[in-house]
Length: 200
Image (cartoon, rainbow, N blue to C red; front, side):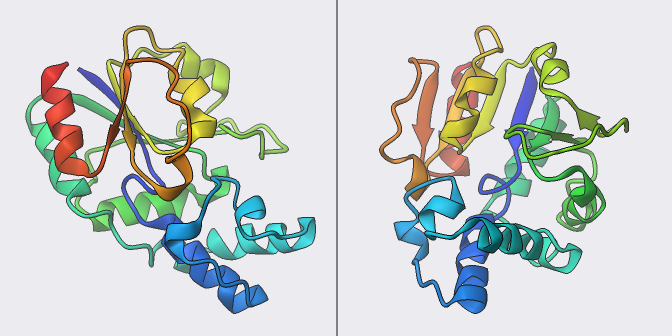
């Protein structure tokens, strides 16, 4: 089975770290459980310059390497690889964050899972021709049988994969999101995601 796994807030606890950065930089105190929108500019009520500063700070190599792993993520991903599934980690992180992101995965025993940077949200302003970068068109040309996502903004991307079951990792910002169809199933943790995969 070919499996698509998002990186941030699926494999690691990115948003929890961003709440700390917003507090340190702008004295914006929004507890993690109250992050209502995937768009952190909106969640933290930032102006354009503040949002740019937040994103730069959150993607510094030392910051990326400090993110905590989502409980049991590497355990289940390695289990799937051992079972013969073909796992790809698909991230909307900036292309220039690839190296520290790859190092984070390696440090968490996920060296067997390839990482691809895809401009999911139209943030990149240049073309990157590397083996680890993909355009949305290239992503859409892929086939996946199972996907793990947390972002309502990315639901439209995984809809391109015919008959793909999607585990929606339950997070504060997707609680009110309408799931596109019955192939999307909300899961509270990695154990629940694994149980859903077994039903595929």
